[in-house]
Image (tube, rainbow, N blue to C red; front, side):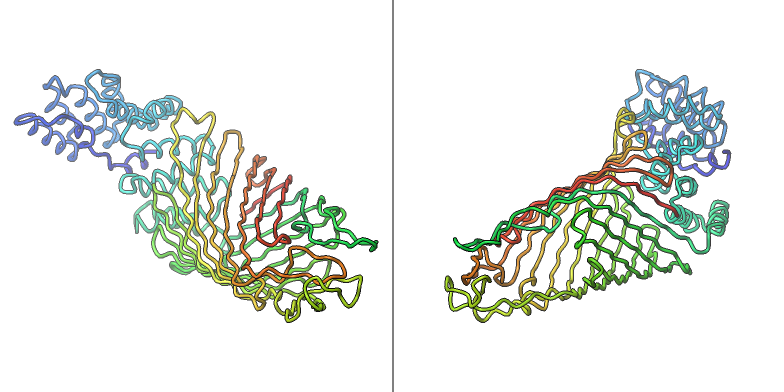
Length: 554
C-alpha cells in the first residue's frame, strides 16, 4: 500500500490554486513560492506562505493536505483536509478535490468504507477524474469486485497516464485476471513493462507475464433454442395456377420452425516474441430444426492469426480463416477469409478498429436451367411447368461463387455516468460504424456494391445483467437486373424486369445476459430483419427469438 502512495506522486499543486482569481504582487509571489515548496516537499512552509491571506486559508489547507499525501504522511494530511471541508470560500471543484484527497488519505489509512464515501462525494466535482477512478478501482479490487475494478483502473490509465501509471495498469492486470480475461490482463502487464522499463513495477509485471501459461488460450460458446418465423427467407408469393390445373399452390407453411443451435470458438497463442504474437483459431456452429431438417447446418472453421503491437495503444493483426459448411449432410459452401485490422485505443475517447478484408465463397450447389418459352405469356412446352425467356442461362447467371472485398471502420466509446446512477446503470458504451463491400460473383445475379451503417448501445446493469443492442441499415446496389420474375404462371412463359435489382435491409438485434459465474451466463435474444427489394422473391421479413447458455474460459 505504501508503494502505491509513493508511485502516485503526480498530484499538481498548481491545479488547486489555478482557479484562484488573478491576484497581483505579493499574493502571486506567495502562490508561486508555495507551489515550489510543495514540489520540494516543504508542506509546512507552503501552508505558512498562504495561510496569512484570508482568501487563501482553506486552499492552503487543501494544498498542505495534498503535499502530505505526496510524502506519505496520511494522518497529518487528513487533519488538514478535514479542516478545509465544505469551506464557503472554496469553489465546487476545490470542494471536490478536498473530498478526493480525503478519500486517498483514508484509503492509505485502511479506512476503506470512509474512503469510498469520500470518493463518491468527490465525483462530478473534482478535476482529478483519473485519481478518482484509480482509487475507486483499488477499493473495488480490494473488495474482490474485479468486474468493477478493471474498467475503473483502465479509465484511470487512459485519462491521465502521467499521473496514474504504471500503478493503474498493474492493478488493472490483476483485476482482469480476477475475471478470467487473460488477454486483457497480459495487455495491461505489458503496458507496465513498457512504461516502467527496469523499475520495480515492471519487474513485478514481468513475473505476472512469466507466470501466465506459455500458450494462453480462449474458448467461448453458446447453446440454446431459437424460433424462426422465416427459415427459408422466402419473399412474396410469385406462383399462379391457371384454372383447371390441380396439385399446385404456394403458401408460407413450413417456413416457421424451432431449432436447437450451438456455437463454439477458440484460439491458442503459439508464440510471443517482442511485439509479435501469433496463434491458431478454430470454431464450429450448427443447428438442428424440429421439422425442417433439410435445412440443418454444420459449419466448422479453422484459421490462424499474426499480431504486432505497434505501441501501447495500437495493435495490427492479420487473420486467415477457412470454413466448410454442410446442409442436410450435403456440401453447401467453402469459404476463405483474409483480414487485416488495426486497433487503436484513444484512451478517454474510446477505441477504433479499421478493417480490410477479402472473402472467397465457393457455393457447392447449382441452379437448374429453366426451359425457354415461345414468348412472354406464351404456352410452355410442358403444360405443367413454367418457362422463362429465351437467352437466359439461369445456371450461369445465378452462380454465387465469387470474391468479396471490403473495408470497415468502427468506434466504441464509453459514456461517463454520474455516480448517482450506480444503483441503476454501471456502464454504458456507444458503438457505431460503416462498412463498404463489393462482391464480384461469377453470375450476374449476385454481383453488387453494399454500404452498411450500424450503431449500438451496450448497457452494464448491476447484479450481473448486460444488454447489448444493435441496429443497422444496408443498401445493396446490384449491377444488373434479376433473373427471378415477380410473377410466374404455371404452363406460361414469365417475363423479367429490366430494372437493376436493389435492396434495402434493416436489422435490429438485442440480447440480455445474466452472469451466473465468472465463466457462465444465460441470455435471451430477439432479432428483426426486413429486406425490401424490387424483386418480390427477395422481399421478406424475419423475426427470431432465442434463449441460450453461454460460457467463456481463458
